[in-house]
Length: 361
Image: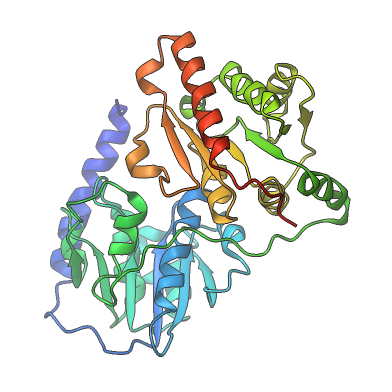
């Protein structure tokens, strides 16, 4: 349940959106045919959300002629998207003095990078992103703004897009935002070729040489994490199936990773890695077990078969079901540790059976 100050903030933002929709109202216009430059907007600070922008950029590049695709993102997620082959420019939003609207330094700086033929507010329909919708409108200038058709932000979009009613998949819905421009293909997140330090190369060679699995027991939000004991169950199942296990970790998660390593015979603690190092390790092992977190999206983006363990989140919305990936929802078993352990063991064994038998070169 939201705190009273968050509820008050949400009420204020919704009221602001309604007033802004009236202030920015303009006659309906058709989208330009053959757009030459498009801006995608997603300004929250989440690795997974940044990676979910990449299918949209890749889809837009399939237009003929292919437009230039720019992204406006949070300053701390730009690193996730740098060097991506489908992205022409990455812009970041200076959030200072946003209350000044079009006069805010950050808004003026982004507008100076335009113009664009279309701006896509890459929000969702469940929790309308008032700030994202307002920023999209303010930086668009004369460009058409496309975004979710949902109150109270829908009227801020020149082309409001109704949500699909045949799927709960966030990825499918996000791609659906492009439907006014193209018939969206089914694409997964992608990542640049990882920038690997020389110090990590011997480990990557070792992992590629024989069957391995990488466990990532951490994640940004603790309430989504499965217990170390359940990751221990997963690791022991892999060992029994002939796979060596490495346990990867992020900032502040080393103790958690060591706990998991201690529960798995022969498991090794991965060295400290940045985003590129983790991506390279996951790609080398081609077998990942993780929570519903940023590393889940990263693992899928580097084409590593991924078994994602979900807790208190909808796997149909956030998970990946297309083989070789699979989600496992453990929320119904939260009060029964043995049932959860049995489910993890079965899922790992079924997941492993579907993995390619050959080791990637």
